[in-house]
Image (cartoon, rainbow, N blue to C red):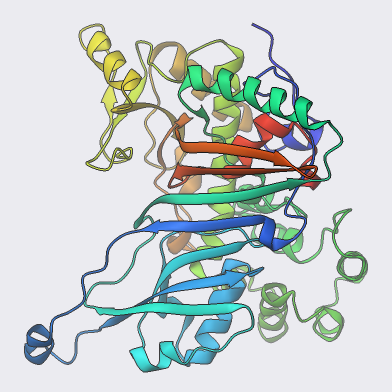
Length: 444
């Protein structure tokens, strides 16, 4: 069947088409941060008991957990400011999942710092509550999902048209039991969608070019001062000029610039100065782009997302009905019927490859689609081994092709649409909303 094609900007991120052919409502997300409320469904933290604390080896670390509610904070910048206030290194702060910047978000964070210091955190538009001390550190992925309350503004359709279009898209997606689990535009940068390009340069071992792309390479649509500064640096390539002129809010760019003033041409060392979660984000963004291309190709070829074909690789679910990414089940003629039933019941998910140095392709037609995308990019498994920066090497994995939606509801009034829903961890709200809105990236 023919699918509605995306705009050029989305195609450049691998989001090549829409699954639904229903009319979009257009509109705008995040006119203010309060229009996009994200509440993490966090793991339960077991506090350390007084008796265990009394007998515990004092050389072992304890971790202070807190729910952190922030408004309009980018995750890496928030962690940087928290580390300054607490007087600890940024790698002593852990979180379960990255959140949107232009939003009001509540998430669980652990600190290798005393509880009284965490209680005393004082940052603008940041609230800290629910403090618990535990012997285990929080890790990436230690969450169940996220709940969203979202307002879509700047709508031009009548209220009846909005209801009809939303209901038509909801009905179409209900037959799929979810929506295509693309990585959203935030993965690549909404204003400066350069993370995937930097990631590819890094795996190609073109470290100087990667730094140039991050520091310079002005993008239309970013703030005028930022654009002009990047453009001038691109022209002069003068780090002394850059450290005097780069805006303070471009703090990670300034970290790279400062390092390269002190250590000329040590581009690997400069990248190593970035926080690990930021540096590896570049690699993950490139892997996400490849995944988006593979998912687009599968939809275009008419292969199902909510049930397997022979050759697929299936992810079972855990006790919380979340896909288990470390257990892969190849679909064969013998187990096809059983696995199809499991997928239809939401007890298993069809997967696509997140390509890395230990990736395994599917077989048959699904595998051919995966291989074609990788071959077109001209990359191999070994490219994801970054021997100079082992902390950002990536083994790869597999990701569910379908994202289920829980408790979806919407309200139309006063020329706005309010939506509420829950998603599993790793799924992007904007990817679901693009099926309803069918608008430009700049409106996300």
